[in-house]
Length: 525
Image (cartoon, rainbow, N blue to C red; front, side):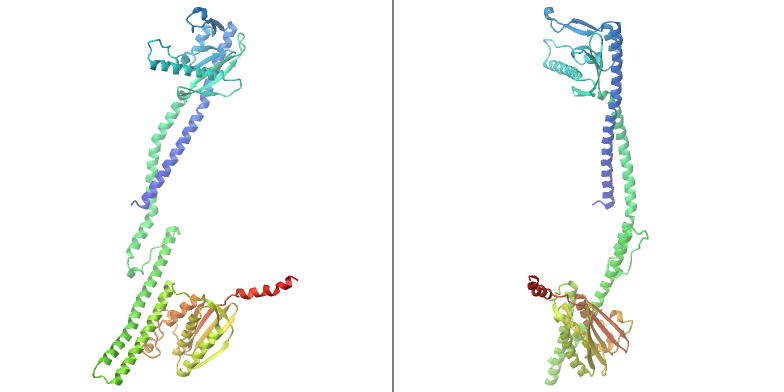
């Protein structure tokens, strides 16, 4: 398949060839039309010469003589026809081209030798059909010329007549003579004889220059296209070098010209950055998921082997089975959380949106937090719980609030405090969960919403408070799916504050429909 450079050059060559062809045809037509005026001036000059000859001859005597018409062989049937004097005809014979002189009645009194040569001698009885047809065609052309001359009127424009496939330009001059009131001098010339040479020269020049110009233009276009696509070639080579996930840290060189290729390079660099982060997250996710599954599987295997041993007492077997059941439950929770995040990433997790009143939902979560806090020796409080309604999924919102509350209780030491607050400000509702727990270091704060991330991996892993590090990731997805934001602020050993901001639900159509229905009777009087 041809390269873009070659296709672009061929397209340019085709466009240039079409342009040259159209330009040459237009120039040829304009040249042909422009050459008519010199031809007209030449014919008018010859007509003026013939006019002066006739006027001079009229001063010398009668210009018209009558001679027997030789058309009829029988002398008794012959008629007298007018013609110019012998000396006048001799002077007019010097004029080239087709010249004819007509009297006031339209009778031919003179025709030039060039016009007479148009008609061959009449064929005799031994002539072939082709010779007769040739004579008939020539005589018809001769008569067509005379008919065209007879149609010329004073003040009329020039005329053109086609004689045997050849166009003839015809002009006329009217000359009043003493012996005939008006004499018409008509002069004609084939346009090809006058314009053909100029048109041929123009056509020859175009045929010689156009190919050279086309070849030079195509060569220059090919070179220019090569230079224009050189950055694309370098860009392609650089991209081919970044062929796997291990080379995504490399970046393309951005040209400072700011053109389309530079913009494309910037876009590709941004895409490479996103791919690098995605591949890195995928590798971390795979490693973390494998590690999280490895520990419970090892414990589960050990418990199963211990329960299957014949030397294990029945009481220890029950303990081993209970531990195995506990690990199985943790693995099922992990798989369920991973499935939730996978569906969320693919956009296949639909939310059942409906108006949800947050105050009852937060109170329900608060009651659960009281029970959990009492068991952990924490003081759980809710200083404010204002009414607010949002459009959302009640189940997912409850999961969000429970995640934040249980996370605060999990990482708050005994004797600490957990505070839950729901406030309404403008068109948003804000839920805050504050604790006095271990806090999060400033260096770790940007990563708390990453999957499998935990603030204290050593102490949380394997302990009863330890989780999988997916709760905050799921919470952030729920908030974003509802069009809100989830932020966190924390200081190490001072506690953490998680803030959820959700847009309030617009007024329902039912609330607006009640007002017109109640006021309708009043408007009707």
